[in-house]
Length: 261
Image 1 (cartoon, rainbow, N blue to C red):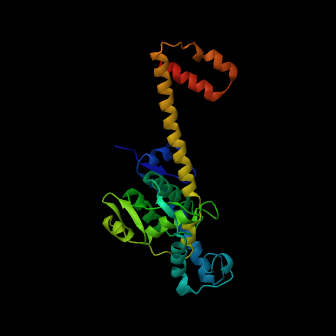
Image 2 (cartoon, rainbow, N blue to C red):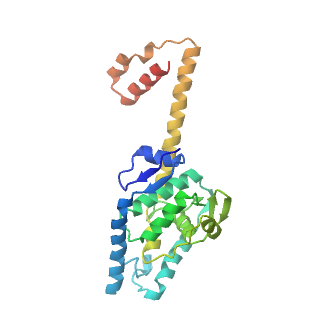
């Protein structure tokens, strides 16, 4: 049985992200609950004071000076998600999107974004039950965050868009219902928190690293087999030669080839 990776914000080792990319289940460390709840309570206190605070009860961008009334705050957060879910192209690979979900979960769990515990619970449940948003491979990335890809992720959380599931590709509302989940009703600042961040870029960068690792491992095995088949010498891999060069990668590669041969 595959080991479940526990997400401790800021302390997940590279091996943990690699395992999630390869399909390992993940869960958030329960110790995050208190700081997440306090972060959400801080947003509630801001609203109670009635002061305009960007992203909570104001518009966005050029509309930052426009005050949004309390009755429209949920619509504001929903609209920022839907307006940015404008990616194009083929769906991103499921392993990359799984990794994006896990990265986002760990980021929000630091308790600095003001999201509700229920929102994190839904994100974690989607990851655990393989409700993986369909995220187009092209869209706004890197400017104020990976806005378009993360908007497609957040859209599924509110029941809009599509998701890959064990039963196939389904409309978001059906996918959530099939997994026993209820779409989120985003509170103040939550849409903004879900869209800001670079989890899509990071997931793709990690995927590139993990696939490159597999290519390197294959190249080492092929190299050892080819040398052996040609009755080549293993003298070039003598550790004394590589110790003189002092290149850690070269030393490790030579050691691997010696071990394989």
